[in-house]
Length: 261
Image (cartoon, rainbow, N blue to C red; front, top):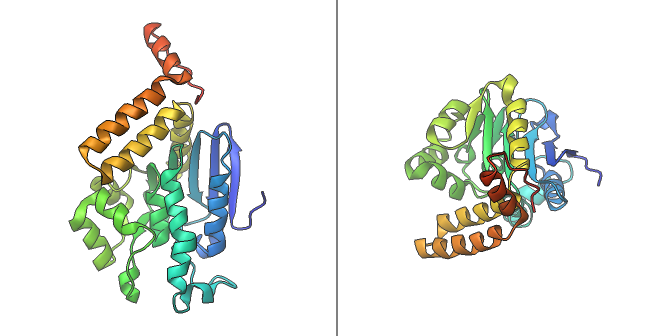
């Protein structure tokens, strides 16, 4: 499928998606959100996804001035509809994707761009990158799942600080807080992100999918919910070809060759 606002390419078992509106710091127009959703629905047999931004930014937030879309977002009720029909489904889709998602954050990840980044399973950020919830500066509230993502990742006090004070949180501080996986030198960002995505693409894909579901249950459910989910997940993963290969590799003292099945 041809896209206008993103690039999507396969590298081995990795689907690499680049937000491609560099002249707007990859601001998320409705079109970009919908094209990203389409690309994520069409991952085929990819075993890992890498999302990054073109140029000097990851994503500067929702685009309030996109050609032909301004009224759809800024009109009365427009932002509510844009969230419900486009942005929220996108973030939800990233969270529910059955393969590991690596987000390589270059430059700003603001507003819904922050949500897109933090929805990844592993978030790497270049030293010049930052995370921003600037809604308070225009009298609005964080959206795109930011409240849920931030409160669970860094706790109430720090989430409140980000949302109510509208401060930029740099890569190193984000790592220190546990908001992201790792801060790296700008020039090393894509190499490290690709190395991690490659490692994940060679792992037990079915087990990864079950881990993601169980983590989501752990965030919202009870310990008994988790016990049940883990037991069911172990039943499913235990019947996989990868589990058999993992067991044989352990007995034979060699590195397992997982196939994602």
